[in-house]
Image 1 (cartoon, rainbow, N blue to C red):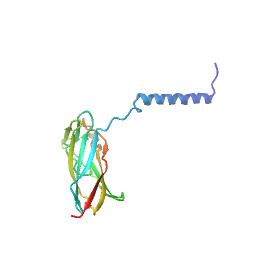
Image 2 (cartoon, helix red, strand yellow):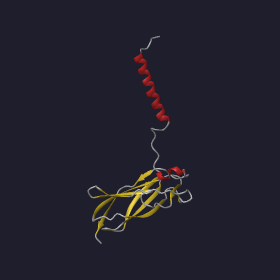
Image 3 (cartoon, rainbow, N blue to C red):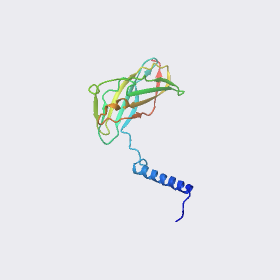
Image 4 (cartoon, rainbow, N blue to C red):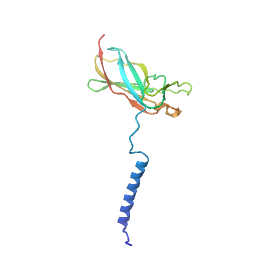
Length: 171
């Protein structure tokens, strides 16, 4: 039997380690496609937006999973579970939701069951007094502030909406 040098032993060990790593990755599903997000977020600016006035944003949350989920009954205040960002025509940020932190007991948190493919809609007033011009609205819905509660059926994560354009005009 041939005696292996230290370099040959080291090389064999590295190859064996890489083979085991590939085997473990495959067996634990890291190479499998990621499951689709359970929530889809869509935004719309309601009605005309006038110079110096707040805008109303309609937020639609759709359950895209194959089973029922739980979602908060309310998204208020802005900055807690829903955050908005507004950019002007040049791409500069002109508004960002204030950060809101809320502490409440489990009994104060109202949840609603949302069936598969069902959509819940909310309207929120965004107090961004903007000058005339064209803008882009971005939004993010996040249940991360609720993650410590371990609520059954409540998806935990952050989901972004596609940007929506709108125009601010004189009255």
